[in-house]
Length: 281
Image (cartoon, rainbow, N blue to C red; front, side, top):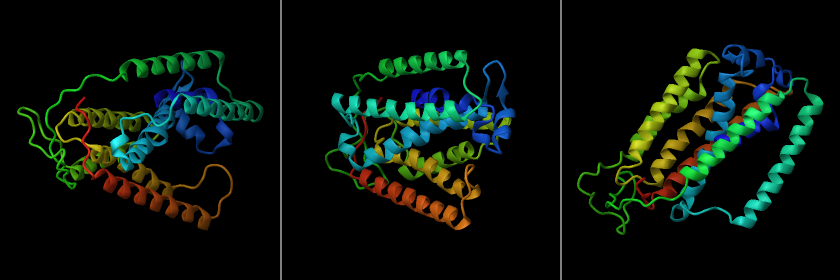
């Protein structure tokens, strides 16, 4: 997900390195407050663009979609043929976007920025391949999720010494402030520091909790949904940065999007309540 985010923002539309992207009025504000001159980029934009792709483009949508089929949550979505087709389509679309950027924009990524981004993307992909290899999992018994209907096939007592997972409701309430801090971060070093700290602490808590007996797909939904809900609510607070859009169209879009996020999140949580725990990792 990080590799995808950096590819999009650093190599495809190159917004990460642009000094005046599409003449957006608020661009200078998001750029100058946390500008890192040696790299020619804004730390706030890295957090917003790359972090946004990690959360909103990849991880949260995957979490909700897989909740509808929890029995297949650990299986690949597509095979080799599908990967080839998706890759070809993605590269073709990316080339169109890159071509438009190069012909319509005046601020482009430098050769050094392109090479640096490509190296980091390659390292991220390599890390994903190495760290993502399946590992043998311990097999302590899993407990039923207190917030879901237990499945007799998995509802057994926890193994001695294995802590129980938090309730799904508790997980949601813990993830919500992290989501709010991230989505409402200000384009300052203080704002970036608070957002990064919240994400790091939240990530550590999730990692620890996910090793608990009874951690299941419902917990994953409870971590992902607050971020999507926070983003959907925040969208009411600003107008599109490009083009003229009427208030009716803008708020109508916001209402439909928020309703969609609510319906998908709730239905994903209910689908996950079929009680499928995930292997401890």
